[in-house]
Image (cartoon, rainbow, N blue to C red; front, side):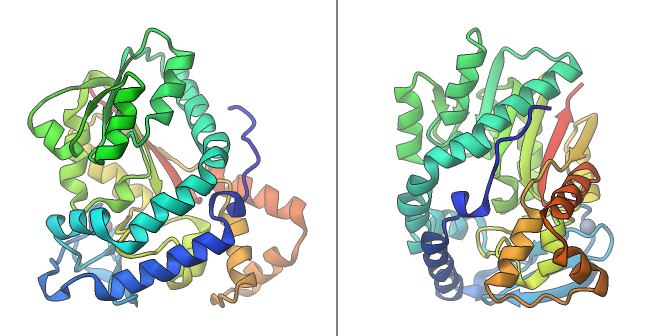
Length: 335
Ligand SMILES: [Zn+2]
């Protein structure tokens, strides 16, 4: 693997604007929805309904699956309400207007470019040489544009429901489907030798339908590579209800490794591999404690966090290598 670019939480979540985003999200979570219309769902990973734990966050309930350890919101808004939320809520417009604009270049350097390199390495290792690439949630087309720089023969397709973003993709010469992946899959509009999807799974209303749709838009013999947030990351496990990632209604699904394998195998993929190349878990825990979070740390965790940066770096590496980081990649192969 390439040496990853240095990444700092502050660079992708600058404290001042991120705090304002958190404040607006909490407000929206409390007041935007008619919660009597919420729907109950089972574990999006394994389908079980037994819960090992649950807690409320801004009046949404997060549950921890007793069978596979996935963490998920239930009851949750139905699809129409969630779409309405993403199009008109205050926190969502603040996110695109402020957080993304302010951190765009940093995100490109520290997240998107390493993503392209990582995908190249995975494909190289698998001996897979895709031509048609479909990016689900292609946003402003940054990933596909970078992909084209490195793979000039590639045929680019984006799936992007946002009108403004879809237009940006078109301006860059990307064939774009202005719809959700579920709609594109149902109409069988396109399939890719390589399907990519960054940071979408945690947001989707119906993960089972989403996974089936990802399978549908993956060509036979093709691969789908997704990144998402996972329940088994160090920061999530340690901070739990105090984790800033557990933010309703944005983040509804934090699957365990087992949950992800079950979900994507069930949707038809013949092989599903999960790994966690995260770099921020330890820093996120430390920053949260500095900000006043008071997670229930074990004696050992306190000792670990009292050590110097060499120990933290080595521990972060251990987490990444043992599927214990919350930044997760899923590599799915279709026969
Ligand atoms: Zn489960």
